[in-house]
Length: 282
Image 1 (cartoon, rainbow, N blue to C red):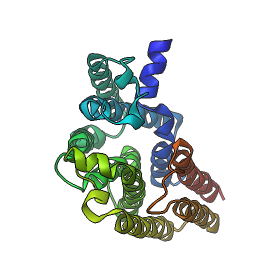
Image 2: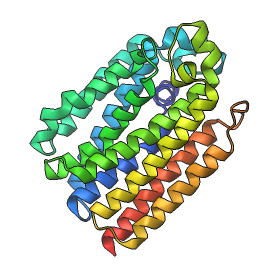
Image 3: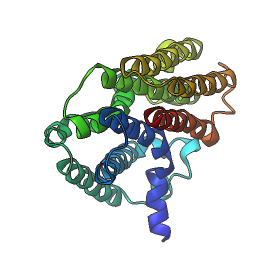
């Protein structure tokens, strides 16, 4: 059981709350109602498989840096609770789960599976080359709602592109905020990030703009899908959460950028999911 817990901690399974609700939103919007239990089942497996593979691979590739970062001293791979070969096996098994799930959804899902996997593989290496690493992470997460839409409808249209964009810049913005804590470490080890490239004050300003774009994207999705007015209450609630999150961070104080800080972001996706369901059923 301790080994299982170590692997769950390594992939931070609780952070699935960030992307999985958006995945369900994509499915619900595509179906124009509640998808079947089978569709929900395979979409969930695909999401868990893709995300688990991405996290295990990322932690394996970044291990040499994580061992040097005091903030990561308790990570399972740093302590040795999870061995690199175990993380690689989990990555392969999770990718297999993702492909298996994709094969049980719309045929287009399996055809596009390599494109979905690509940013998951590229992202761990991006900090070595470019400050756009945060955007690549956003791209990886944007696939969650788009993939679910494809799983139901087998096409890609403007509403789901906008939803994917909104999710992508939302995630990228918070990843850049998180990266502000590591500017000194990144500079010392030749790593790249938005804070390293633009400085912390400008990065925080850029992140605010990105989150404005994100909220606008959620709003436009509602307009294009002719959503009931209750949907926009979820958009407003999401905006309020984002405003609060930005209000407690300054260029010189990141003490509140904790696990709780990031778990609050899950409120954005959960709120939008709840209000989307209510809107569809209204």
